Length: 225
Length: 223
Image 1 (cartoon, rainbow over the protein chains, first blue to last red):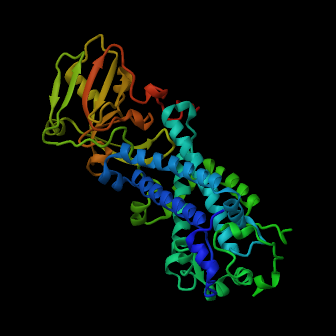
Image 2: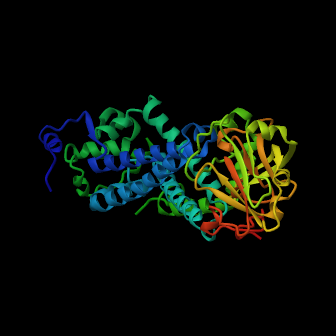
Image 3: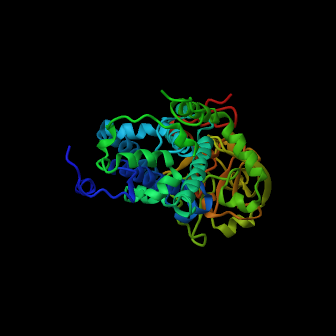
């Protein structure tokens, strides 16, 4: 594996003031998902809200945007999950792993709900699509559930944006998702167990593939602090 | 070894959330309606929970009400060509009815004003052979068909007003059909033509398997 120039620099001159938090593939996955969800929510809302529907008027176009975005969303996430290899999948698996210190319980819960909403909204979307093609495939309640799921997604997104952009204690996290690194001081405060583990490893992270380094026992005491 | 089995995240939580979500196929609609009835009017306007979904098949057509004409033709003795003004001069009826969409949503207590289709057909004079009424929309190629008997039902209207004001564009202005006993796809919006025929052509949704006799609660797989 070839280290990227950035990671090579990092290895040469480790910067203890910054910790590597998200690798390139994680960030690409996040922003693909984020972009698709924003387009889906916007186009979906235009289909759903009567005044907007009137303003835009071109429902078939908006619906095509909505459906095509949904298909591209699924394809892109699937492709990245496959092409990202085990390295990416292992990192994603941390979102469901109680022993992984990189994310706290709230973040893991958020990710789990997001994933469930994504599956449910795709499923109900497919049901609506099929029902428009033939009444025998129509499932009553699919439209209402799709709407409820979209509203839940919106609520979750607003909370996520508040923590990532506005809330003083947590908004530094956004830097991790834009540039991949966060201040070590912030990490020590918000993710002490992860910061301790990462600082112990100092500079060996960076390419993202370095994650399968020597396994370190999970330190419960750090979670309590 | 995980120290504890997490309740709120991980594979098991994910599967539970998906399963719980799927039960929403049953409760989401009544829940939305209940929440909507509690919200103040302003919130309801932003996030409609009990209201209309504006469905079109090719987009809301641009209609100039000054130029618009309703043509009633086919198997009639006196073909009609009516302006909006002419329609307003015909006997007006007002009725309150629920609007049911086949996709599952319902709007209760819509107040429609307009002219009975029976009135229009009486003025045009249906000839003996006429068996069905084809109603065409300016939103091509949307159309739908009623049998003569269905078209003559007293609550079947060509509406030009809704909830105390003129019909608005998303709801089919300047004139739309209202067939309260049937699912909404029978209530053609942006109507510009009515034609009496012997053999009805299939309506837009009928071509996709939806029932021509779209009685609410008694068609499209609903008993």
